[in-house]
Length: 140
Image 1: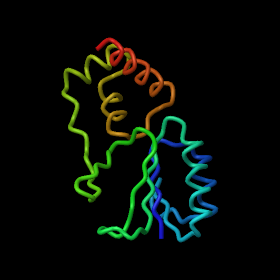
Image 2: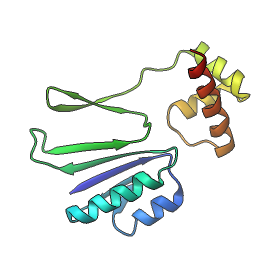
Image 3: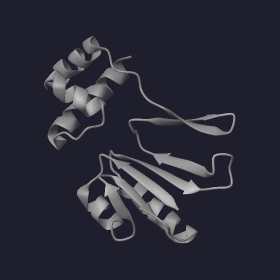
């Protein structure tokens, strides 16, 4: 059994995955594939995710009964604590930081908040915000 979770990926990638897996919710794929097929599919997803993020959960002989692989900058991070995989959610961005990012990207604060929450926004606006984030990180 495997579960594949995608964030901010192209519709073409989601459509290609629907040939192999079921998509009960947008961006969540479930199926039961042989190990080799699963590995090839994972490589394909990682190669085509662009700025998106993907998380793969598969059966494994661990204490939890599964293992987690991630690729990209997702809205959540997997942390290993003494052999247990835990999910870390980012703390909310303070309003002044979102406001300054919105000003430097020349977009409204609501759009920046949607971007930071991992919700879909227009590609042009996403590119502006990502560029502003890179400038902000490089100036630190």
